[in-house]
Amino acid sequence: MTSILTNAPLAPLLDRLFEQADQSSSPALLGISREEGERLMRSKTGYLDFYSRAKDLWLPVSRETGVLLYQLARSTNARNIVEFGTSFGLSTLYLAAALRDNGGGHLIGSEFEPSKIAKARQHLVVGGVDDLVEIRDGDALKTLATDLPESIDLLLLDGAKSLYCEVLDLVESHLRPGALIVADNADFSPEYLARVRSPENGYLSVPFGEDVELSIRLG
Image (cartoon, rainbow, N blue to C red):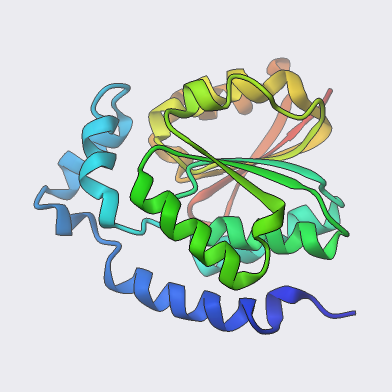
C-alpha cells in the first residue's frame, strides 16, 4: 500500500513549501525580540498584534510533527478533523493526506489572515486534496462556534496559544471517546496543559517530542 504523502504531487510540494518556510519563519523578522514575541503569544489580547505582524511568516509545524499528524489521523481512521490555525496549510496537507488515504473525510480549518487563507487554498489545490478541506475565514472563537461535525476524531491546536482552552471549549462536546488532540507549542499555554494533564477533566496527556502535547479524550 502506498500513500499520497510520499508521491507526487504532494511529496515535492511539501519539500518546496518547507524550503520556503525555512527562509521566512523567524519572529526576528518582525522586528521584535524573542521575549516580546513570546509575551504576545501568551497574551489573550496581544496575540492579535503578534499574528497580524506575522501575516507573512510561515510558523509551520515541523516535518516530524507533520508526519506525526498523518500517522495519528491515518491509524485512527479519522474522518472528521478540526484544525485551529491553518496558516499557509502545511499541517493541513498532512491531515488531508491521511483523510484521502482513509477513503475520505472532512477537515475544518480556521485562519483569520486572508492572505494566508488564499495561499493555503492554492497549496491544497496543487496537492490534490482541496476537496477534503474547508477553511473558515475569521476569528476561530466565532468560526468554530457553530456547524461542527457531531463526532470529531482529531483536533489540532496550532493557532494563538493563549486561546487553546477557549477553542477546546468550543470543540470538546464533539470529541468522540478516543479522539486525539495535538497541541503544538503547548508550553506557551500553561492553562491548557494543566487542563489536559488532569485526569478528572477527561483526558490522558503526555508531552511528545520537543514541542507537542498529545492528549486523548477518555469519554
